[in-house]
Length: 164
Image (cartoon, one colour):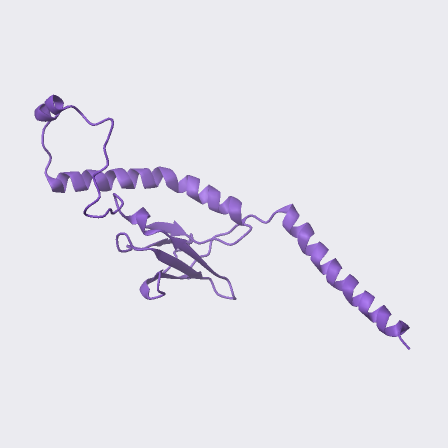
């Protein structure tokens, strides 16, 4: 698993402490981001994890990541029926097809997952940056909150002066 740490509004968190924890909070791994804010972990397959990034000066963020992202096929109960594939080849075609060893299939699956991850990374990065972007509505809402607090304080002060 690879990723990167960034600050809201832009900029990458270089040399930030990065911790991989399981759902119970136990530390699984620890690393530092590189000069571009990138990190790499090898999480256990199928385990939900939380990535915690501490860039210092109070800049701490965490992100949960579902364990399903680290396994090729979702786990299913032993007594559950195998899913039916409507595009499965016919028996005659299967007889003519060359058989692959399980190790070859695992290697093919790994390469496909790596290729898909390479293609998905820019999309996921763009989505994360868009979600973390500071918006005009956020600024106006913050100013409105500050104005409301001051208005309440001034109202309370004038009430206090008017009472005998």
